[in-house]
Image (cartoon, rainbow, N blue to C red):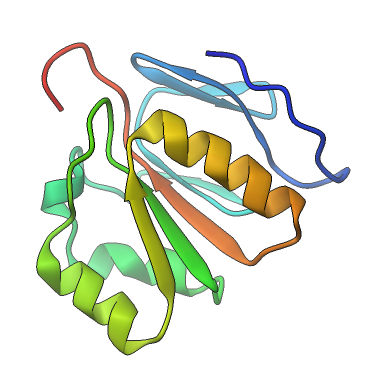
Length: 128
């Protein structure tokens, strides 16, 4: 699905998402990504949100987010309780949604100038 959103020059925005691809600034990514308004990081996420570990949060927390969004794939799937507890303890807000919703939320909140980080897992054709 293509997304149309106005965003400040120099900031990353998600252009489109679909099965097997998330497009940011004209570049298509075939694996999960971590995205901030300033950065896109590949290779730092496991294949599924359920496999997240504390070590995977490191790249996200380096950006001092006020909110973290998890896009869990085609369907809503929760990360392990330990991940949620870490964010809760650090007083960082977080939302869990399917990847399409997370892409739209990222663009909206980024456009508002929020310190946001999104961990976006690929939408697959099999059950996520």
